[in-house]
Amino acid sequence: MEVAIAGSVVTGQFWMAYSDEYFRPELQPSFAADDPRQFTNVVGKVFPAYMPQVGDLITVSASALKTAFEAGDTHVIPVAGELKMDWAAADPGTGLCYKLQQTIPLSFGSIGLNSTGSRETGYILECIRAR
Image (cartoon, rainbow, N blue to C red; front, top):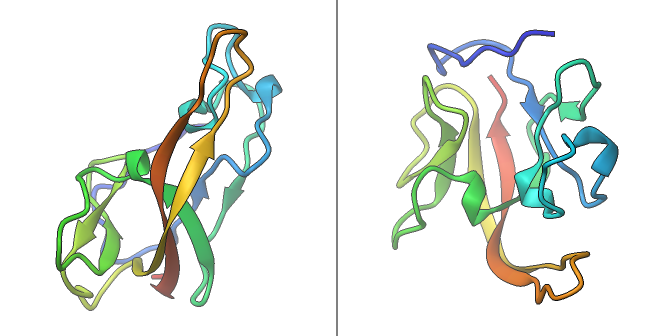
């Protein structure tokens, strides 16, 4: 399977790789951290993906977005040539677009003996346009 970075984000059919709430070490290279935010799609292994549909709700961590949330940010859109999405102050009117519904705290534990885990802001986003 080949993965390509989209040169244009205005039209097309989008698929998103994801790491669900279940951490799957079998999808990680042996040197990977035990943190689900650090998931890697290993060559030759099938990984989870989904095709966004209007009305879908997804939860992403702050680290999944290119820039930090700022006052007035209400939408999340893909960025051409990037692997992360980014904030927008308004719906651009074309292409894949999510609307911020709610912020939540996300807690990440760790299986390391001396690990304390961490917290990060999570964003619940609703897909308002899938193409």
